[in-house]
Image (tube, rainbow, N blue to C red; front, side, top):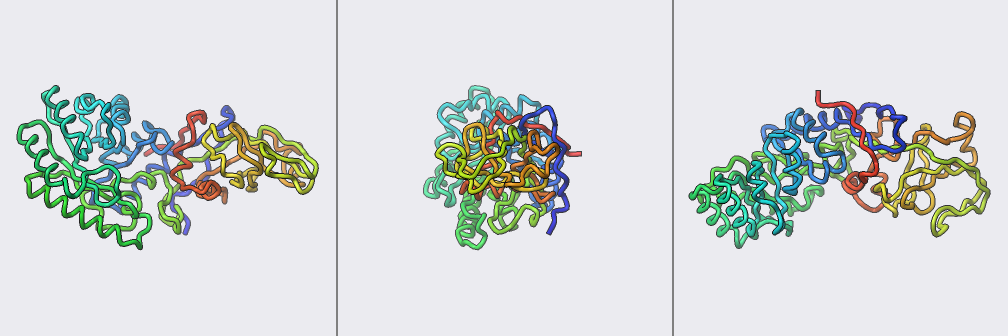
Length: 394
């Protein structure tokens, strides 16, 4: 199945030696598509971690223009950056430390996740500012990370409602996070949903008038309509990536938004027996042509991902030898010069991954080479790689 949103990889900017091209039109279309799946639930676009490496502010603006009613920014500092950029939609931040600036969060009307210990700090900020904080109580339904335990949940709800009666906060949401929604056949998701409903009932029986109940992430949004409740929180999907090992982005109607490309920095012929890169783990078995790719692990390409694909002149070549801090090498083959103007690949565009529209490599291939997931590859592309934005929500 071909995604209806697939478009050609954008033209390369000749002024940039390396770049991550971010297709904002793809992000907008992904959001519209996912909103239709989630309707009538509200839609939170998760833009934490610099929007999974795509750029938080441009992505957040695109998401709002495409109809996202909420934004998710895991740290308060991220939420404050959204406010500083003039973004006014509701923003939820939920991972805090003792040094989190709760006062700035309340002053800037951020919604705050609360797993228990944070309650007194949030209340202190609200008391200082003389304005109520908006909180979403988080229940740990089985993931085992942050979130209140089931045993302590009634006490947390009681304490929060007492502070609400004092005018210091408003309990506007209850939420949790799923552990195995990307493996739809596993029974733990049903167990988590049951525990979530139980926690919601306890909060509502205590008098909480909830605006949003939310637990669904990207895989649950796509595969578990019974998890949508009042709102879904979608991260990976808005960037056009699949959360499922056995389903591609195209099969889900999504378009990858990031294209990582550079240009060949050197092209040279080498004899049989030539070693390549640190450790000389690759030795040329025959005379061949090598192309130097000026991206490495300092740019976020995993050092371990030898064999990762690079698309040059319509052909995909493997990385050979160890990936270094700033560079890697591809084997263009013994006839490697033949397909290039003037017999050299020097300066030829080289795409590590993109949207796959031209048969080029996808980020999942790099994830496979590195033994990781697509989430990690896009989020680790470093600030040393300039982002170039194309398209938009309109």
